[in-house]
Length: 272
Image (cartoon, rainbow, N blue to C red):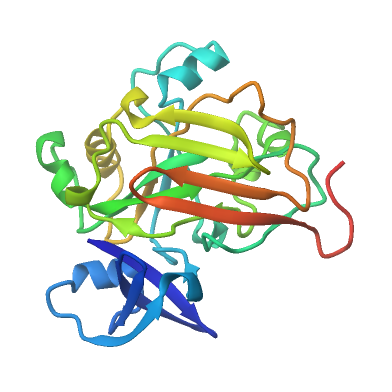
């Protein structure tokens, strides 16, 4: 099944997506619709192109991100393969919709985006064995992990470069595991038609179930929590920094695309 969160004015609603049909249901988000999938009431039907999509999980308790998890990216950086997942965190305030504009902070002159397969947690998970961890996955979605690289590398801690407001488009839909083969799903990230990243989830070092199990050892995961599983290497076409007025397309085959336009800061300035 495919679930979405739709925005109508200031109200969010869950929806079930059937091809180009979006059926609004009596749930607040895509995750809530998944959790209540056997007892939903249909409220309205819309054409996919006429709805405004919000983040599939707008207010997770935890957003965990994994660095250095694609072999191509590890090789690109000249790093040794990690023995354990390299985990860092984001805040819910970083999340935004898969079609929303992205304001580029004027305090940075090196802003980057990255495509990431994202795990959406479907039940409470605590110290879950890897053998059963896949059963805790509600589904998968697309994330664009935007970063202020100059701020990220100011210190040995990357947090300040990873958490600017509205910096993580999430969506367009949550796709349940029975509908998506993540052993070899193609990922791409393009800017104004130039492909900055391309790769396959077959290149993952730590697989989704392994990450769910590992993270559940040190934090109790809740329904709607997110695990961004890492990003592949850049292509030679990748630019040095995002600039206002560009269109980013972040795609995973079998899920869809987040399509976001970059805009200048409200003070009228923009990155150099």
